[in-house]
Amino acid sequence: MKLSIEKFQTEFEQVLRQFEIEKVAERIWKNDFTVWSDKPDEITNRLGWLTSPQNSLSQLKEILTFVEEVRKEGFKKTLLLGMGGSSLAPEVFRLTFGLQEGYLDLAVLDSTDPQMILNYANTFDPKETLYIVSTKSGGTIETFSFMKYFYNLTSEKVGKENVGKHFIAITDPGSGLESTAKQLNYRKIFLNDPKIGGRYSALSLFGIVPAALIGVNVAQLLKIAEAFAFSSKENNSAKNPSAQIGILMGLLAKHGIDKVTFITTERLSYFGAWVEQLIAESTGKIGKGILPVVGEDILTPDKYSSDRLFVYIRLQNDDALREKVEAFQNTGHPIVEIVLDDIYELCAEFFRWEFATIAASWLLNIQPFDQPNVESAKIVARKMVQEYKENGKLPELNYAVEENEIKISSEITASSLKELVAKFLDSMNSQDVSLPKPYVSIHAYLTMNNESEKVLQIIRTKIQEKYKAATTIGFGPRFLHSTGQLHKGDAGNGLFIQFIYDSDEDVAIPDEAGEDKSSMSFNVLIKSQALGDRQALLENERRLITVDLGKEVFSNLKLISELI
Image (cartoon, rainbow, N blue to C red; front, top):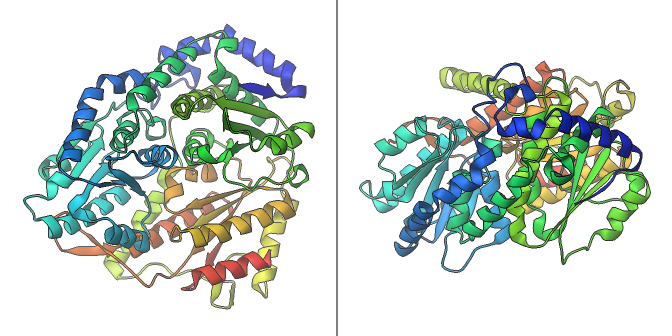
């Protein structure tokens, strides 16, 4: 690991000494809650991830025996039904390591968009699919809605007597999912360490069981992670690279450099979605926050403000982005470079960034394990769902501008789409200078596909080029379990562009698994979540516009991109 931090070097060394004097690493490993708070709530019962590698190794025989069992029975695919911490690490494993011959191909469903549901229903034959229902709490509405739909679909294909053999659960002991899985006779229930929060669960059963199913050598993975974890016990910061990065993130955030921008070579690019959730949800609260930026186009240094820490992660044999990284270094931006000798060292990165995040939180006086603002959007969404069940309709938005079948809801007065979008984005130029520099976050309650992602990327790049602002993209409701906490809990310097659309298709959500009755559909659920998130942002005095793209999503997204 290499740090290029020039003018911050002296202060950085002072904070490292403070870390050593206060014996922070030692206290963390002793589960000392006073590192972050004067109360143990959601701390002493959230540090189990420190020993995840060895705990998962101790369960390896059970995991591998299960994997061989389902392979022999002819299962070809596995569909993981989950959100946030339960789904992001498995997705990284599949997209980074690929599928080993003879193992089960893995996909992750973490969207309530009805077209996404139907896509998996049409492309995954239930007869050869194993469904992983993955949730720590055992009561996540999205996960249970997925489960009930696919349980009924599978029951139709394989019969009621066989449907349970196609489902497994990964959850905490005593959760609602554990009791449901027993009632529905699931093939297998994996009970995870309850002292691990979702975003810190990559090396626990939530990440390792799916990894084993696609043929990753999880024994090698966990042994590398276990060896790396020992370095985080060092109070001597020179021997603790995880603490060094965390302290640097926290120190720079105090100086207004609060956007950690990840530059990864192609093979490692999928790691960003996982680390984004970890940093954002852990640090974005009580008016503070470190914004992780992943997936931005790498532009020339003049297109960036002075609020960036760049993290360059690459494999030893791939230095394709060296010239671009050196351009940032030459213009004085702080840089962290991490080089992996082998793709399996990615598992050490999971641990490195978990520890780094809690070290940064120590310096910023943030409790990294709670998520006080996540529930706010859920509460509003639940109210809207209940209103729908009682009245048969959801609340309707008032629109400031309607043009070309595009409607924008905003408090801004404007005579055209172009004027409204310009006024909204130009508000960055008049932001209170006491706040950190602004960023723009795109919330896309749309079908995740290459077409939409390509145009959204064009929009974010245009914004970055014109305003030199950090930009992020999140698909809803997926991002609600990731960056949603930071959006409502940070200093309030974000601008939010919410995209919604009218789906031609819909899918009923069964009230109960195995029963036909339905009181709600996925279309109603995702609209409730979008409206709930919108209201929660407004209640937290965030700047927001909601753009209804109607039915022609791709063409109308292109129109929006042309307005910037």
